[in-house]
Image 1: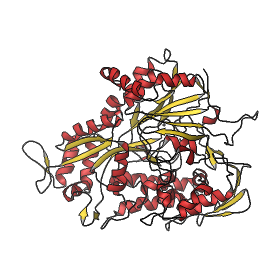
Image 2: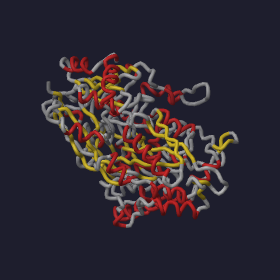
Image 3: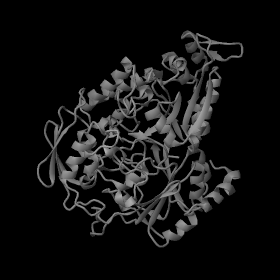
Length: 598
């Protein structure tokens, strides 16, 4: 699972106001870009290409080191298995078949014949062994993928060994329900290119692999195995990927797939700009933000596109407080006064009751969605509904004030909230700039909390800045973000709930591992333990009970205050043929089958 910014492509894989006064300004800016929508249309007449957009530049092209959704990597890599975007079923990928032992702890995979990397070199079982044993299982290479591969309380990894030129064996040290799905979804990396970076170190003694394939790397040096390969990247403008001539897929007539020859990812500064480009014909696919739905729905026929509705999106949105009580070099990472507020359960409960999620749904999401209460998607069999007993926090400002007073907070004559020591309760709230929905959510949170005397300073920041603060500097009070990915398997969120998980953002242990005095709550450890138990349980009914208990603990202790679950909506140009849209797979899960008609 990863941070969600805004992406038209999901890996086991989607979401996103029209400002009339800004049209001329933004359109002018687009025209000054090195590649305008008009030019893209001209190029598309000569080459079969799909044009999409992203709100921010990638931080890396190293698939192992990524922590946020990176659309380009989704085009550049395949897993051993693929997931059917309609049913969620696992299907052959780089592995043509697999056999599972009776105890579900051993899997033997068989690779397809004649697999190749995008540079033409053979992709072999040796690459598989290298990818897992020397990269993902390497404790000197921090990767969020490691968290979803750990088994049991000891966090052991499966044993992966070569059997012959095409077969390898995966043995789990303990029962591990998501073993097949987890192993099958991992991006493999090329041994012939990256072995030297794993084995050598930089001036600080870290593997050079940590910084290989950054955004400054020449595109031809970045090797993948997916349907497309990177050919150009211009910071702040676009990413271009051309069809991988060595890709393994063919149709029934023996024609090479994918049929599309080029992917262009336009880097745009806001969802508004992206919408303008789509409406002018410069983009082929766009995630539809609820506040734009009514506008572009009216243009569906005239604009030669169709809006697809996949039901509730497989994504979460939430506000979270920094609960980290650790210090760096003797300095607390969170202001101790604020830390006392954030770590007071009644404070978080009061905030949950003070946020008017129905107003968010009605006004920001235009009624296109529903309130969200759980970290587990509604489409999965493990979801616990409010009707089944999941705790919820209905909008109740009076109850919010009572909770604050019961915890020792007080109000001054101006109705401002003070803590027991007389400090004004005021904190910073950040989210990623350019995402209209999140910026609107932040504005409403600021208004809602003002009603119970809390002052919120809301500051949207660049997405990469946001990720850096959450993961590394820990310089934040509260944030609004979302997670996406993982599909139907709850263990895909292990990197969120594991105590040292790379996405355990509410109480993060940074990659530098340099915190002193970090405090782990009993409930925090209990949730982590439940996710371990859930991954080890093979009986589906008992698994559901375990994840139900985890959901209850999350809602009772509120490390995340969930907001609204929108519908998965996407607008696709009618020239794009073969789309089978779903919330689970998005618009491009069957990318290899899509075709562009003139």
